[in-house]
Amino acid sequence: MPIKVNDPFKKLNPKFYPVWITKKSDIILTGGRSSTKSSVVSQKLVEKKMRYPMGNAVILRQVANTLRKSVYSQISWALHDAGVANQFIFKANPMEIIHKKWGTGFHFSGADDPEKLKSLIIPVGYVQDLWFEEANSFDGEKALDTIQDTFIRKVLPDGREMQTWYSWNPERNPYHWSNEFAKKHKNNESYLVHHSTYMDDIRGYNSKQILNKIENYKKNDIDYWRWMYKGEVIGMGDNVYNADLFHLIDELPEDEHLYGLYFATDTGHMVSATATIAVGITNKQNIVILDTDYYSPKGKTHKKPPSEMTKDLYDFYEKVRKKYNVPIYQKTIDSAEGGIRNQYFNDYGEHIHAVAKSKKVDMIDYVHDLLAQGRVYVMNILSNKIFMDEHKKYQWDQKTLQPGREPEVIKDDDHTCDCFQYFVKDNLRQLGLKF
Image 1 (tube, one colour):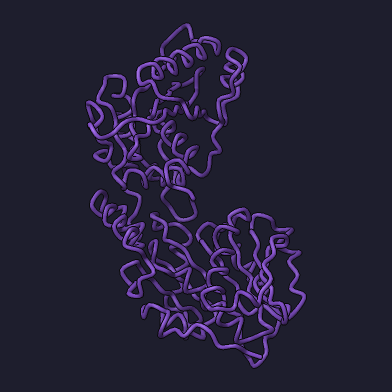
Image 2 (cartoon, helix red, strand yellow):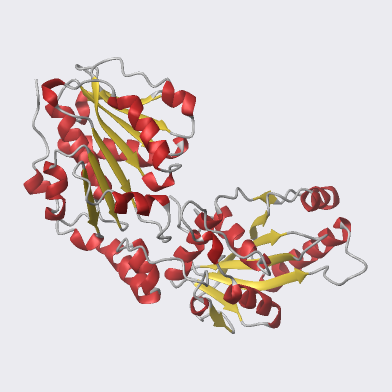
């Protein structure tokens, strides 16, 4: 028996009324962070599930290990919000949420495992909803079409059509396939293309704390705010970073102190420079570049062997530790480097942690997030000049900012830039960038 839940006029922000009532088969939801678009999709999928007992929803992320903390939790929240969670069984393997009586529900999968996706069998009922969350992270429109074709074949009762939902925060790059996908379908009668921001929330889903945080982003970096929170496609520009957001200081403020040290190394000892940065995190969660060690073999007839490089590295660690007298929490190195890591373990019996690198544009975005919060400081000392110079000159390769291409940076004099990205990527939780 159908059950009516989720009165849109009580729960929804009015901006999303067209999304709630649409009969169109494909719904594209773009917008800034905290726009509540994912909450709306999850509420709508729950409403349809309870209205059509034999209906199922298939919910996808590009990477399977992101499901539990994102869409699985989102649907769980929506079921509890609707007051029907006690009617469902929550399973981890396979990851699904199934109605106890009807045997239908919500099925979750990652697109990074095609075989698992192909073997996703819906034993009871039919698929009425397909949701691509963070659709911009999928491998292009063709990948979405291929997956959609898998679930669209079955005829639904009463002449209804399966609805496909696409939600994401727009990419900076106007030529990214997802931005072109939304633009292409804007006038397609089968598609609803909808854009929202946190400013559309009049129901109070966003706390005062998050609103204050957003205002802080707006104050520190208006372009980042426009992209991240207004969901505007602002373009890549030439320079990767706004150098003014690296605040030079001569000493720590009186009300701040370091609680831990972090190091990150980018290596290239035979053909290019090797750089290591020393970073401190303060009691106010600010980031301070304390010192930089930089060695370039360029123009040198005698290039340092790994045993000499590791001694320099050890000496740099010790110099900074003794100067600031706080514990070292993490030592990070480029995951592509094996020689220095092995030599360091052989010499000092300690493993330097190899960073789990991701796409360059994603690692840069993490740094942008920190900068936009106004949390990055650089000690104004001679050894840090190379850090500042390289970040000021760090640029996108304009030839790569084209349709169908992944944006790339110009790989010249970027060693401290890589170091800083490795530090951020290896310490996302400590920096409050991952939960």
